[in-house]
Length: 83
Length: 431
Image 1 (cartoon, each protein chain N blue to C red):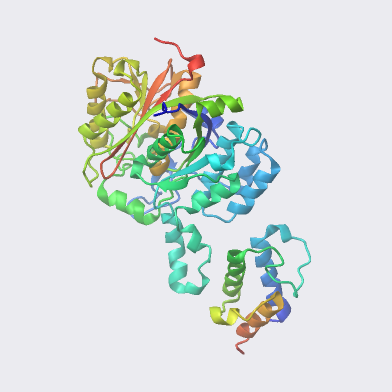
Image 2 (image 1 turned 180 degrees about the vertical axis):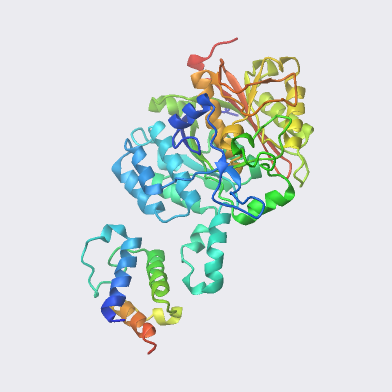
């Protein structure tokens, strides 16, 4: 799967949790916090994305992530088994 | 000491198998329409499904559109807060919105810190937990982080308080099948004592998992065996063929407030609550007792300085369980004595099933509707009454003047409750 495909799945989950973002441009440089997600929504989006992609990321690795690019990058590495 | 304040009902909301709001519910009560059929849940013994009154077509977001009289901001907040919440939270939000609308709290508000919330029931997330268990066992990492909030019963308190901006006292109360009445009693006491000016009493639907269904079934408490192929006949409170309760899913909410507050806000008083008693048997079992049930009704009457002669109607607990029905009739006979043949009796459970922790609030709404509209609703399937002296309502609704009504709820573990509703003073006449 390409990185773009991973970002697409993350965006779908963002819209599922935050419906007001439907049909809006979501920049990969944005953070979930910038998009209006509260702390539980942020973890929900991460969990849903891991499940869709059938990968598991230990919480300690997620600590390093501070925007969508970081999250997509980490998910992409796990999907391709290189992390 | 100040005189206790009068407590009135100014808003009601109901979502049930026989009506998605109080108007539809009222019409179904009058028509004697039963919501009992087959549920989606089945077991080896119930291949077509368990018999029950289910909220089969419940849908939260479209359901919000019913309350178009409410401000858009409130409805948006409700959608944001509960769109992804478990079913029982959503059911409580919808019935509370209806009660809020009727009480006109959106246009005639009460200061947020003078309002409280009591949520009826405990262990409200059984089905939600059960549904998450398989996924958890396979991949615990994928469990939703919301689980840590939703599994608490108090998720209801948090959600309702955020939607309605309520900042006084808030908590959940458990009383098994008497949880609804217990919540009404706690709301009544909080207003009466001056702790809050108004209280939202919210009763989410009871959402049983297959494990609770099987547990009730193994206990022998659940009916539906003899009339398995005629589900509409399975729930038959006070009939000789009764064999156990039939599960129902309904949510109901009430807005209770002090009479002064309702007067100040110029909102219509639907009924007054004049007494409410909760007494224990000292018994952990599922066996009801005449002594405990009698004491609950008598203490409620004594609180209100009333005599059996004032009572026009009793909304019975009437679960269609042989021991429960017989015990309640014996208790009613002890309380009413010579007034027995004058006082109307029925069981709302014959129409909506046993809604367990929400039953008391659903039945409170049924009492207020019958009182206001002047009828008693049918007690379905009463072909051969277990008692020949009582004045049961039969298969059709009967016009009746109800000025004073008792509503009974009894729970496992010897929890006995009775709440007294009175027609508002301006409509009240002494018979």
